[in-house]
Length: 296
Figure 1 (cartoon, rainbow, N blue to C red):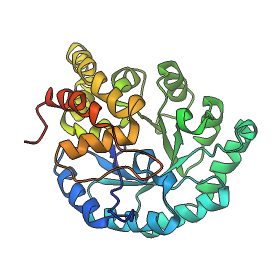
Figure 2 (figure 1 turned 90 degrees about the vertical axis):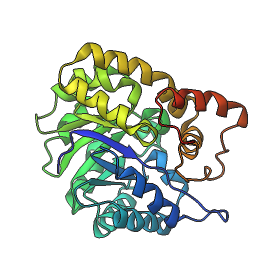
Figure 3 (figure 1 turned 180 degrees about the horizontal axis):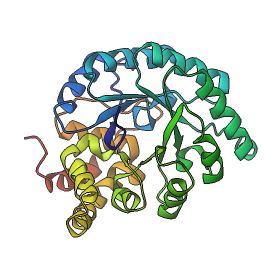
Figure 4 (figure 1 turned 60 degrees about the horizontal axis):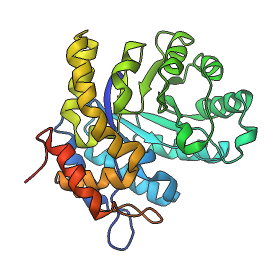
């Protein structure tokens, strides 16, 4: 399946009793699949996977797989702190229909997470996985950094297809692209840097903003791919403020608040995360309204 394009890392709705709400999840996906997105990630960072147990994760995978058509790429986050736990989660995701698995770096024992440790971890996961593996580097959350030298070694594995890089360092992405084979896919992890990362070789992005503004995000991808750089730069500049609101500034609470404004019933974040303060809602509404996708 084609990994070049724009993917949405969808949030996980929870009901009033703090249980995974598969009905709301399917309803939201019913709207997203009408958009020009290449596919979806369930149980990524925006899916609050770190706050869910294995049974809940399986519930979300099964419900999402049932809703996502087979012509859309279906990616499941399966990263755990232990190699064994990651392998088990990866096998369950494959059994439930994942096309790819997205595996974040373990980070609890930060000082021990060397290149050799990461190579051993991901090699074991890729050897055991029934489906292709995507590496996932998100230093702002994990506190560790998957270095290009380690990625270059891992890119030689036949079952490691690419990676998501959620840092904002364009030079880092350029190194990832230059040090890996041509068929190794690097995906940007933030809409605010999609254009410059594609300019140095990224093939697209897994973007939180694509949940709220899928059409502009896909349009930015298409403009950049077509070499229409002035138009792409202008659109990138327009997207940066709202991307910041849903990313570095407010994270999952901001994303869920934005989606609720847009008519996607995804509820509130799971504790200990707090809902977005009401004082921020007007600024969020104004940022979204600029793109004329806000619901009445």
